[in-house]
Length: 291
Image (tube, rainbow, N blue to C red):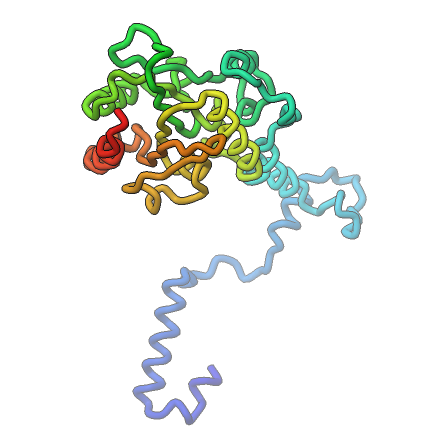
């Protein structure tokens, strides 16, 4: 109230405006009704209820004997702490020297549940596989397009496929319309298991990125198509929206492979307007006459 007695405020109207401002703030803050005039330490009260009556007062200097044990338990079980504890796999990742050297060995290692990068987030995994267009089976004489996504979700795991039925059909329709029906379409992902909280742990990304490059080297595809932000970041170390609408090149054993970045099919199914943009991305490959 000292401010109201300050002559520097000016006229009576200025002081009235200040008073009205104080009242309005008080009302917005929710202090329009008195609840109790007695000051209560709520944490202390709860701690007393949680402690036996015959127990002596805890030593506040000992961090293991908090006056609020219920808060300790809440902190240990908070989502943030659970995320930090669960995001990093407990098993030691297989060293690079022992990564599978052939495509067949890689598929078997994923199916066995070996501790490869991206294969340690759950008990269910989806190994890479070919997506058939008009072929009954993959033809070794045909060129290979390697599709790279992020990781399987719950629907993919139940369907045993890296893409859902609708996503598969969308991919088939678009690639066929673009003229790639005579190519072998190989589907892979950065992680073969579903990461907790549906997000690849940041601390695991360097090894995951290195492993997908190893995977590419084994397969030796003719064309690479990264689907979504995570795959784009893994291959180009760049953001999807800044990378699409341009054809890139992935250097593999001193040979450049065409690399296209575009949206994940789940994005296209969620937003039909994005299909036109994805089609424009595919046209970049069509113009290269590499069908």
